[in-house]
Amino acid sequence: MRTSPVILALLSFFPGASLLGQTATEDSVGLKDYYQEYFNMGVSVSPQSLSGSERNLILEHFNSLTAENVMKMGPIHPHEDRYSWEGADAIVDFAQTNHLKVRGHTLCWHQQTPKWMFVDANGDTVSKDVLLNRLEEHITAVVTRYKGRVYAWDVVNEAVADGDGPMLRSSPWFKICGKEFIVKAFEYAHKADPQAKLFYNDYNATQPGKCERIYNLVKELKDNNVPIHGIGLQGHWSITIPTENELRDALDKYALLGLELQITELDITIYPKESGRRAKRSDENDTFTPELEEKQVNQYSKIFEILRDHRDHITGVTFWNVSDRHSWLDNFPVRGRKNYPLLFDQQLNPKKAYWEVVKF
Ligand code: GLA
Image (cartoon, rainbow, N blue to C red):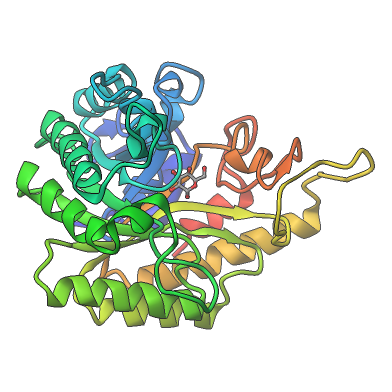
């Protein structure tokens, strides 16, 4: 039976109150509880964050973890003959001990790849056969190690290009293997763990042009019986993007494919989009003003209303970082400019946006 969000909200305001005979401390009420009938609530973490000050917040609010970096190719497979499992093991062990799910991220991407991946001992670009063998070896080792403990994998990340040119990004993967690397990555992952849910994951996935291209790519994979089970919309959004129509239209379109949908990297920047990286200007104001907070509250509220409307297709929502104490957006695209993109503030308290997200 579902506990009403109103009761859950009351319980979290009155910590002494009890739910089904348990104290609220034993049965602390968090995002995952409000959304228990909707979708998993996840968060990206570093191994350090699991023993640091954010630990309790993670356990209270989330039931799924994603490794922010340590499962990516570069960190986990720094040399061809050596893996570095410590960080990923720590996250998976923590999840198992605390009964959390794990989304694996990511098996094939054009960034954070190890230096050795695309070249031979002489520094020359490897052949397609060599690269596909390396990809198979990598995916088989990583997926096998966490078989049964990682329930879903972002198999291929960001293979679709932005803009109006060719459909696929001109990455080293594509330049050396053509589009076959995508098919192969899914096949290798499926062979290593036939139970794992396999996702294609990308950003700007609600932008109409890119949505069309992602849809076409995934449809082609599906039509060719490639083992793909879901689409990850990263969800690095802003207080103005996506619009309500963009988000609804994208979710409706992807839903036509009959696959699971997940928001895999949610945060809502308070700044307008900028192209290119730069340092923060000395006179630049990065205060979280009440006006900006109001806009962020409205955007979070609208987005979650739309996500709830699509509960039949959405199986998970994962935030990218835990609280405003630390976000990758503090340094991207503007180095040193503080951002406030998450639901918890720098003191780890729920923000106004949090209370809007759980009010339904
Ligand atoms: C992409 C990747 C993530 C992360 C973010 C920025 O979205 O998928 O793993 O690196 O960029 O932090």
